[in-house]
Image (cartoon, rainbow, N blue to C red; front, side, top):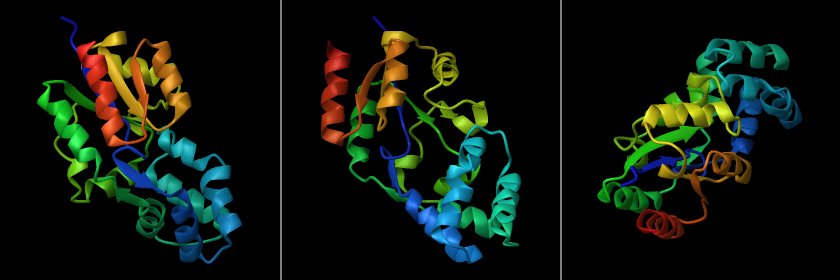
Amino acid sequence: MLERFFYFDLGNVLVKFDHGLAVSQVAELVGCSLEASQHALFDSGLQQAYETGLITSQQFADRVNSLLGSRSQESDVLEAFSAIFTPNDEIIGALEHVQSTGTRIGLLSNTCEAHWQWLQRQPWPMLHGWFDPLVLSYEVRSMKPTRAIYEHCEKACGCRGAGIFFTDDRADNLAAAKQMGWETYQYGTAAELVQHFDAWRLG
């Protein structure tokens, strides 16, 4: 019997997020325009470098301050950048269902150290006690949809190809997973996710 494994994405699956909040909160912190904040955080490529693990949290905050002419504390910059999430409460039922089938569960996320640490401080039940392994882009220095992070996931969970089910909110991330032979579902609702999972598991 084929061993099966389930990887969940983080953003817009387990939790919802709004990058616009990061832009506005950083702009308010340092006293700059929304346009300047948007450029510094995202358009400059800084976020991607941070999520790929190419720079540290301190380097990220220092670079934000440099780009925006600010002297804000590192902790304040990281908090303004990270307090953008809300829990997706409906996903709990899906997690419980997958776990009840004996299927092992892991997490595969493009994220940065500040976001991950901020989330770990929240008491939200969908974030704690479910996932092994945790494949976080900033730790493995590779981001979806590059092939390397999916290869890392296979090694980490001990399953390959058709033995892995993956849900993510982005079509490009899922397309790359399909090229690895994974079963995928573009997240819409927890109920639909369970239906797709069961069809795969029992098929």
